[in-house]
Length: 311
Image (cartoon, rainbow, N blue to C red; front, side, top):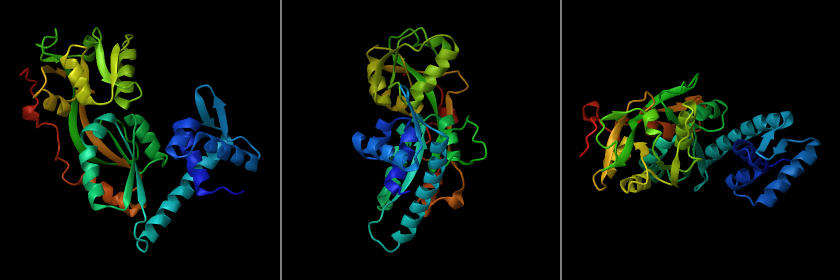
């Protein structure tokens, strides 16, 4: 059989995305070219690698076996790339990072930009996922580094503290909840919400919490950023749930109020998780070290400052 690294990388992306279309986009291939490569792989093997359905694709038993070997081969190729990088100027190493919404929006932009500024031959593939999904994917070797909520069981993964924050409710200055010091999430479900895109990890998390109460999350507007959520909340389009770091910035310029969420999941102690530090490529180890340095930098607020002011 003749499979090249592009074939193997494409197949991995397709399985992880659950879609040939999205897998092709991740692999930077046209959909037609990607479909042809997958069909050629199946023809070469004489067996189906994917089960195709209306909800996407999933690997067959043969596909799962290929996926396991593809991940091993691609990881070894990265190690080879790293070892040769000593001799080849401009050779790039890539670190795959999975992150929950909070870390992705509030802390990783500054952390990763500082790292990339001093590691010009390294690139980072960053993807947003739910924390429990990240644990499973890191354990399977899908990515190098994960950032998860500290409340999630990381199993046998190695973990390090990263940052601290919490989710809060933001409402317009004249909203009925504006005078409240603290509310429970279930008591907010009577109101319209302004939130992120339904595909975002946080929005899926909140929708899941709402569904467990038997009540839907009334998402009126879907936006791309927490700052945009705060701007629409100011105009009474709905209420929003955002990181406290975002809310504290926004309250300086917008007529909104911050209300503490009493739910146990609201505090966010963010955690780095990896499978095995020694097995990571050198540049991935360097990124872990960089992320662990000065873990208090950028922390949302000290405990004494967490009182929810309505000013």
